[in-house]
Amino acid sequence: MVTAQTYDAVVVGGGPAGATAAATLARAGRSVLLLDRAGRIKPCGGAIPPRLIEDFGIPDSLLVARIASARMVAPSGRRVDMPIEDGFVGMVDREQFDEWLRARAAALGAERETGRFERLERDADGLVTLHYRRTGEGDGEALASVRARYVVGADGARSEVAKQALPGAERVPCVFAYHEIVRSPQDAAAERADFDARRCDVYYQGRVSPDFYGWIFPHGGTTSVGVGSARKGFSLRAATATLRAAGGLEGAETLRREGAPIPLKPLRRWDDGRNVVVAGDAAGIVAPASGEGIYYAMEGGRLAAEAVESCLESGRARALVTARRRFMKAHGRVFWILGVMQYFWYSSDRRRERFVGICEDPDVQRLTWQSYMHKRLVRADPRAHLRIFFKDLAHLLGVASP
Image (tube, rainbow, N blue to C red; front, side, top):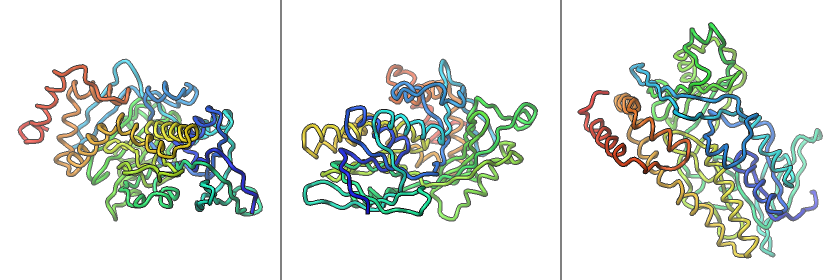
């Protein structure tokens, strides 16, 4: 057993949420240990909005593509293009992006450790002993432990930290995502496949996913082709093969395959009232309907770190609750709207067909992109919202054409 060292905070998980939390605390001058497992990459489309790039200082060098439009594909095969006016969506490779975030946290003063979290142990003096197994040392796994005043659990969906600290955390509903990274087609092959390196394709078809969607997201030299579903027994690999064939990518070289659960509902509580708070997928903050998680993970990691910093300054653990409170104040309404949208529009191919039809409306496109790019609901044009309301109502009542 390695002698336990004490830190102001130990962050478990080195994805966007954990790396951001560690960087925020290190920047504030706190002693931080960032504990992360090696060799894991979450299946992810890799899209990041301009708001993320600006808020978190992401350099252009990390962008492997700039997306100028999205294409929605209905069950009938109907395609609706949604161009982005005066902007772009950045695309990142999660392997490079996550490591850059971890390296930035280390440059700011956080210590890095590669290992697998095992358990928390409450100490009599109010601190926590965190036990883990070091990995990658060449001589097997070594049991180790550290002490912490506070712990940030950012260890993903099905978080072990959350399970041990927050009753009921294991019951958060999830969609299981699977994707294949393939070599992007070039020149004539791209033309035959109707592949555009600056366009994301989103498939709303029951054969691709009975309750979510499938995606083809270009990453420069590679492309993410994947699907998500919460339906037990539904074959994600078979659906991905169907999607690749539909997108003309069945012959593209497959570079790697990845799968993981993605939570689609925020936990009711993110902290234990003492010294543990969760962030990112561990807190359940992936947007319903869209499955977008990178921005919300980093925002949640920042808020969790700021809550810990407040506790360290004041000595009052009740400040941990501010992480969830601040997040839901800023984004809770969007999550609720997207949850209702997913429940209704993704429930059948008939409704998916109508949903794609709604996406053809210029008002819908403009307000959707503005909300996505800037991460806030757009209230500046009440007439556009009123037009959208009546158009949606017509689709809901079935009196509008798909």
